Amino acid sequence: MAFEARLDFVPVDRSQKEEIEALLPIEIGMFGGSGNYDSDVIENPIEVKVFTPYGAPADNFILGKVKGRSFAFLARHGRGHTIPPHAIDYRANMWGMKALGVKRIISPAATGSLQPKKIKLGEFVIADQIFDRTMGRRKDTFFEGGTIAHLPFAEPFCPELRKVAVDTAAELDYKVHNGGTYVCINGPRFSSRAESMFYHGQGWDVIGMTAYPETSLAREAGICFVNISMPTDYDVHGDDGPVTHELVLKTMSENVERVRKFTFAMIDNIPKDASCDCHTAMQSGLF
Image (cartoon, rainbow, N blue to C red; front, side, top):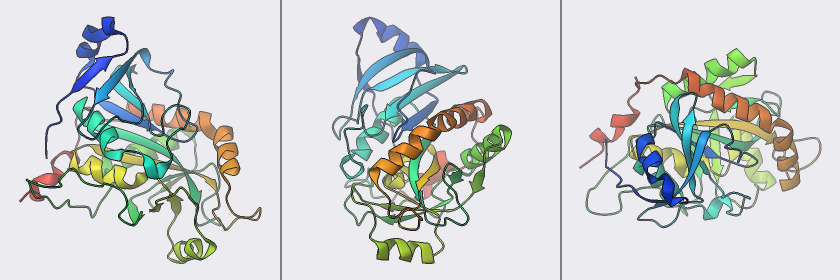
């Protein structure tokens, strides 16, 4: 484990402090993305404001139990989708998860399909690789002085959680693509036609704006992380013209129940004890 994050929090309802402490440490976390802010499946939800060295996370965390597992939910863009992807404080969000004790994170997100002949709208892609095109504009490390660290990042997503996702999709009879490359752009603009055609020509699979640096920060923090991509558009490759925000929201609203069912069904299948190396990945990266 690379570091410990001290938990500093205030319950929105001060009378629930003992209930929160009884839940800690939280086992599983989820970042709710575009169109996915529903935390109603959490039993006896408790809203908590978590303080971090990087400022406020995107919203208050919602804590509780899901299928007997302690659980934390955070709306990545804030409830009501008020924070654009390039302005999210990814370090504050991840530090909050770490401070709560989270060991595994499920991260559903709307994406564009870069390969429309292979990956259709409403299907799911469980990426195993990422290509960062945020151009260095995002804070993507917790190590900015003092301890020097170089993150081993050849395998950016947790293999165990990826298998859980693929197996769960099969149980639900959902079309899933096992593996693929997620291209992360900075946003808030969509790609130019030239950019999108380049990504398509490389054979990469989906394009989005949030998986990086979520995945690198999770790995630095010793947290298993899986991205659940659901294409909502074909970027510039669709017959209906280039992607628009309206198209993304329309497709997401038509499929949001499937996303919820899929991601929450995964919880039953996540082993209590991890067999991957995510929790120890930084041991060889510290100098």
